[in-house]
Image (cartoon, rainbow, N blue to C red; front, side, top):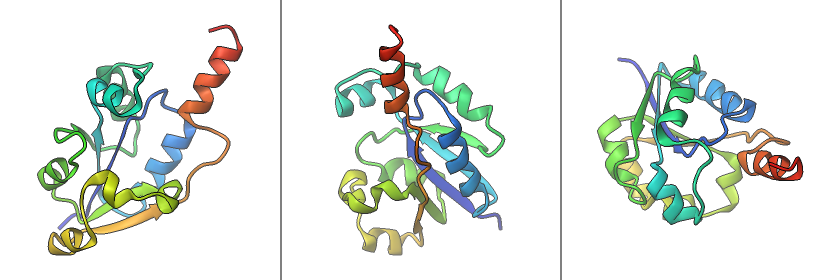
Length: 143
């Protein structure tokens, strides 16, 4: 049986930090499924639109050799819906979430993970690059 890893996010302005994270994911599982946030959900959550559309972000992810599938985050803030559709054994997130309440963000509990036989892992966050940083650089350059 192949091991499935689920991760989710916005993945706007796809960059080497994203690639490094997805590479680490691939070291843990046979199949990597990315649950991609919709443009509408991003605006609701962040109060700003992504630079790239859902379809552009989806195509960027599918072009990455570490990604096997991209699914829509159908539950928006309730991630359990998308997770149960994927049926992963592992959920991976960046360790920048270690100091935040990821359980509240995703609307699940450790008990829920245990009941569904899912392991949550934190992977090292790539420093010196982020979509937020890229947005700032673009603005500084007159964009």
